[in-house]
Image 1 (tube, rainbow, N blue to C red):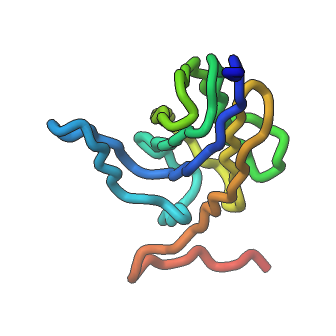
Image 2: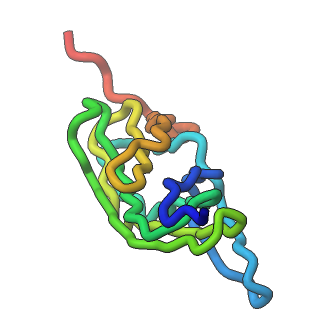
Length: 142
């Protein structure tokens, strides 16, 4: 008996600055992000990419990638994409581009990855303010 539908596993999900595809078909991930350091807030990030690789599934699926604010309920960006796996030994790679992201507050943001409304992974992306060397901080109000 051949299965007609098996929910896939998320083999990896990486947040990075850019994803390129080489001439040989392999992916080249640039600037894998563990946290976002900024000199001040608010700040606009030109773009961030989420690289997801799915495997061990059979059927047609909808991937959802969401960026949540530090309050863990506000969805700042969401992307949905359909993909298909014909054999559990194959894989599918999806790259989501979020452009012109505005971060208004420091704190821990979250990336959520779902397939057909089933949460597969949720990981933190801290945004921290690191003043530039030599920057003068405003005096505290008394």
